[in-house]
Image 1 (tube, rainbow, N blue to C red):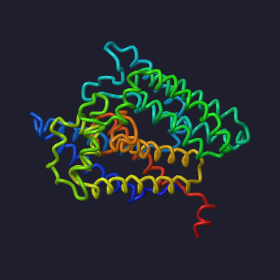
Image 2 (cartoon, one colour):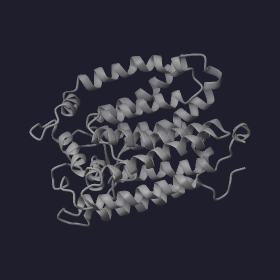
Image 3 (cartoon, rainbow, N blue to C red):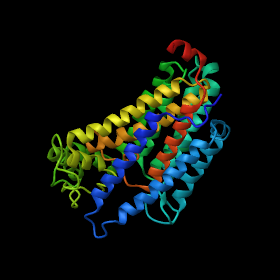
Image 4 (cartoon, rainbow, N blue to C red):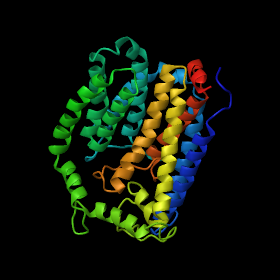
Length: 365
């Protein structure tokens, strides 16, 4: 039986804490601009919409996502195609909904998790000793999700979806060699055709290795690393950072983790990292307990959605990877990204109230 009004308290309070941290540092990043309250008002509005959307996502039965997983995946593909044909110059990543810009690639990440959870839960037990269904999964996700996003172009998000698919397949009953073998072929091909042959993408890699205030490609990487260096152990103090004074572009979105490092120091940045690790631990633990395989895979996929996005953001901010334009979930300024992450958390909290397996309870006892 589903436990009424139940949700995992640790997950919930981790989520609320990240929202509060986001409000604090978005204001800190933007109060120096001409209109001190312009961005924080818009961010508050997005938070309010996100909390409402997350609450309704919590109320939606898991059976709904299971029944309409393929439909939602096809809708996401239609939106990706639509955005490519909208008037305007490239990159074509957003649909203007007047109150905020909607990014179809964010919706596609979620739709991909639904599709994978539905297909894997239905087929993995019967086909776990075959490699053909794994190749089919990679092909469908690439053609209906990763490829249209790469054309936008948003190659970082396309790579993210392929890595997400790999993680979901690793978490399934498919044998590991059947999962890794196609990935070892497909990922290098992806890099060859979408990264190596793209002058823009290669300039991002160049910037990672040539971080310098005098380099066009390496300017952001240098300023991001400088923010962490200036922050030291305890930071320069809330609101006291100087990198937001037009030294580090997009600091309220793509580089907010660097701002946390500058103003709250290593302690603040490490605290944020620990919160995401806690969300990962609780999400995986909750998902593995579930009686229904679709529910468990959905929970794992949602956990990966949140924490993998955080990893991509932190990797860029620490100059371990090239700049890819990923926000920090629940913390960065951004409408569609913030709202979608709130929906993810609402679904994950819903997963936490679903029945656990008897086998798990026996093992646990």
